[in-house]
Image 1 (cartoon, rainbow, N blue to C red):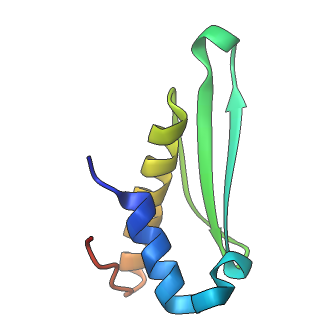
Image 2: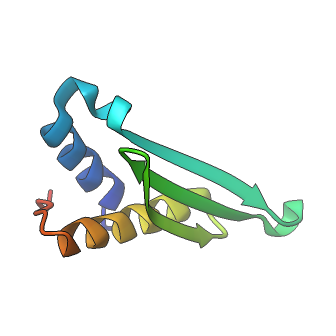
Length: 83
């Protein structure tokens, strides 16, 4: 399994150091009935919305949102190292 959330966290720690938490936020929400909950994960960096993804599994939503965020950062010219 790819570890996109870990890769993103490592990048943010390297970029912002101890202040990484002040520059980035992960939010998750749920919707739908209890037997078919849809989780939506959103990454924000410096109050700018990056990856937003929805899945029926909380962890999968976070990984997908991290993958989308990495793709967006790479399109902006950042290099996100593999782990």
